[in-house]
Image (cartoon, rainbow, N blue to C red; front, side):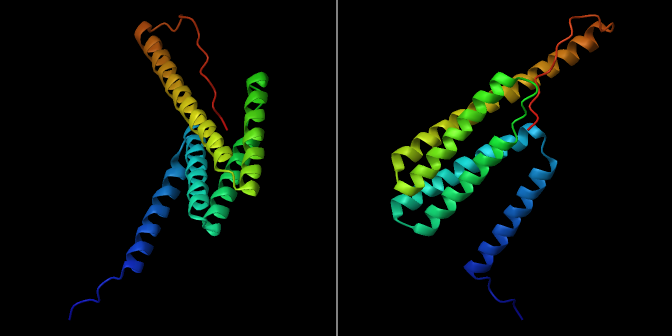
Length: 165
């Protein structure tokens, strides 16, 4: 006896479960820097979902995209640590506050152009964050190489960049 053929619905459900399990593992094993990057990726994904919903006049897709994107931007805003660099933290807080307000206005007015500006800012923020992560990794590697190479540890001390969310 052969097993029943899987329907497209069951395949989609299995694919979704696999994707969710992968994402959960990725989140649980990510560094603080990587978690922030995942949040930025999610905000961009949901902003595009809202954009597609607006274009298709799909109210549910639009609502879900905007609400998820706003929630993530709010999370990004609330997790900024002020202590390491207060001036930079304030500037980034102002950026996220601005983006949040623009998302609210874009969703109320069904304004794709306004949403596109937020998407552009989120993508720029993501690119900047990736460069910062790479720079921090390079500095850590250089610091380790210096410490291992000299054997004395008497070289100039370099403080790593802190990215804790």
